[in-house]
Image (cartoon, rainbow, N blue to C red; front, top):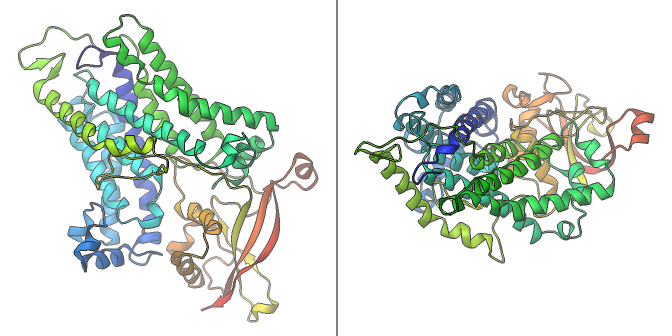
Length: 489
């Protein structure tokens, strides 16, 4: 680092700008493919109804985050236009085109992505209630101030990205230490690979590893999330301590974060959470000589940065200094909040995940029949894309793409009652609604209307090696009870 300019972080900037833009492209693609069926005009939780509800009261209006749809109104066509525009801007940033201009050009592009995706998240209700939504928003906001190729990255913005990564990792570590006993007795990962929301193709193999390996996993997780994040700030010592050691410590800390996140990528499907963490970790990767040396400055520049750009980035730094207080307090609070935003713009948020680990996997299986008598009928299952169903099927790798319906189905058994959107889902299946069926892997009767649907709960567990050799199954399941008795059109 050289004062206001992080001259050794040019490679980091390239990864950050292009990586975050790629994640926005995936988020907009996921929205384009799923939002209309989940939250559109005929969705399970229609966004127009939410906007009408908040419009009737000033108090309700304050509950809704910033969204363009408040002013222009929601239609499925406008949602499609927003997603297509988001994909175009994201693709341009991935290609590095705006970065060829002055720094305000990529800034405008990233702020457009930030505001556009916030417009979606604000009306996304429970289907957009995940921590990685606010993480992507905050990352996109900070990426807006990384500048363009003809200037070095601003030091203050690089440090703010370290602060974001610190809150993400240290917050997750603290929520685990304060959470379930399984994180303290080192047993958490003997269950997690099997009971996580959406297992991947290697989750079963990870689950069947010996117990001592899972205990090492937990210890490694605690070190990576509770100790390593502090080392991300080591390069700041380079401002006072000469030599390469401080920067090397920061780079080593980033490498540890990346390695642990890659293990999570291999063993699960957590949308873009792990990939966003990997991209953010590159903010601490210092490569001496990756950026052009800062020559003597003309009067309108300091450390290679234009004065107007220096003023903007320092202003962002001061803003974060003010708004970060709640998140800092939350990290050390006895009742730590998980994935919480303290302002309407979803900046300086609190992060954390899996404070407790579910010990058994209960799946709600939706079945349908064409028979007239539901009490003496042959029932066939709806097959989801990501959640367990057919016991012979290998779970697919979906991340960083996000299957929102499949994720929400995992949460249902954890609640005390079925949510309203789930009842609407059953109605849409009775109607053989094309948009809803497109969210599934397969419907038992294709586009035909079933006469009856019902919901049955099953206990799932991964098959042992012996069970797989004998029966060629990846899962073993046993039926528990009929949760929702047959309902018809």
